[in-house]
Length: 439
Image (cartoon, rainbow, N blue to C red):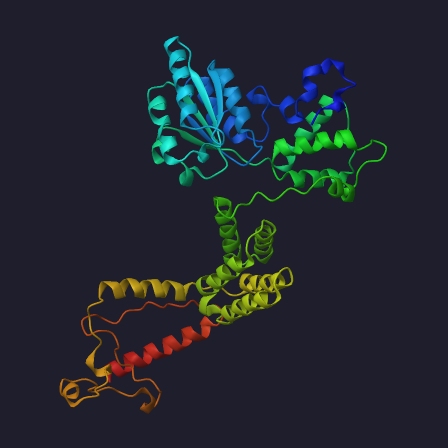
């Protein structure tokens, strides 16, 4: 986009006419960077590195438009290193070799190189290995930028030679400061109502570059005597697709947030993350499957009906499809979040499985085995078995564990929800068991 909005300001220079507003307003010093005080503040890691004069190789991990490239350029300027930038999307091994050779020549002449690699996670594992020797011997100081979780996308060898700094998405306050900078620079006020201005920041979704791109468009199209309201804003500016990829870690972050909100009995937060996932294009069937898991893992026997509620909601979605069927899933999510919680059955299952694997060669006690042949009967199969229904309490109190091990307790329900009644039954049976044992 050409910045015709600057035509009335000749001091900006002709060169600015073809530059995006985000590039023109790019910070030139650490003090101008917005929204990353946790790494550039007075006692923050990046500030301390620069003040010490020792800049290690770094990986900047953060969402789009949070300032990764800007920080890399500022670091090069502060350290008097030659700044070299490549993108993993457009570069291959041949390009890397050229960059490394030029860096070696500079090093021999006493000049260091700061190599900024945008989208570094796009390089495959073997390509990432190419960085190891030049980082190891100090030929380059590597600054990698990635929107993906470095733990998943980068070689452990690369990570061991670089420090990971996490950049945050810009919050509403930081985005507002960017808009104010744009207004000061252009000497114009964004022609938006207060509500539309708030919505503009929501549209940006934490991306500083994106909000300045939108602002430049508004500067050239909206008139000060007729400011845009929210409807006009949405009508003119295309809604940004949510920052959500079902193949990256944001997918797992959101389902984790959904699951933990449900477990924490926060129905409102659970609905928020549920909606974020749907809005990002998540398959509702995936959410339905995870809800069934939540029902058996976190609600469990405290409310056995939760499992059936989730299965019914899943079936309703299959019959209705989107968007009508999503309401059934939302209703089931509310049920899960507001249900009493217990992981006693889940924990019991894991404990029993562990014990079963440890004692998998042990046979059941003979008294609970059927004796379909006379030979088996002669060997004691079924001997002294006490048929529970023939007892006065309907409970014989016999031991059903292998003879070689003591009776163990795996299921220990809390006194919540339906498990209050189960707890009473288990306590009652245990008292009967002890009584019959001593009779």
